[in-house]
Amino acid sequence: MFPEYRELISRLKTTDRHFEKLFNKHNELDQKIKNIETGVLTDTSVIVEELKKEKLKLKDEMHQMLRQYEQ
Image (cartoon, rainbow, N blue to C red):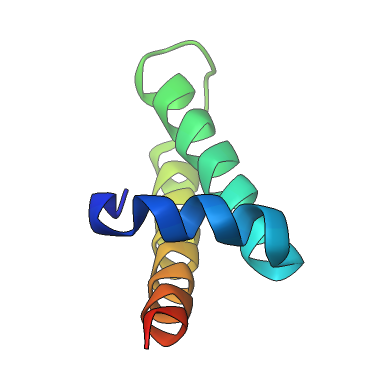
């Protein structure tokens, strides 16, 4: 995710608690979605879609933060 911001992401994960929380939640959702899609967890497709929407919202918020910090 956001390879062009790799260094900034590393820095923000250790200096910005809000960013760190977003990053960790995004990764948690990503893993949960993968587990559901591969059959490791069983769930309905409605829940997967909701998780994907939440994950995208987090990603958008992180991207906005990265762009602000970059300036």
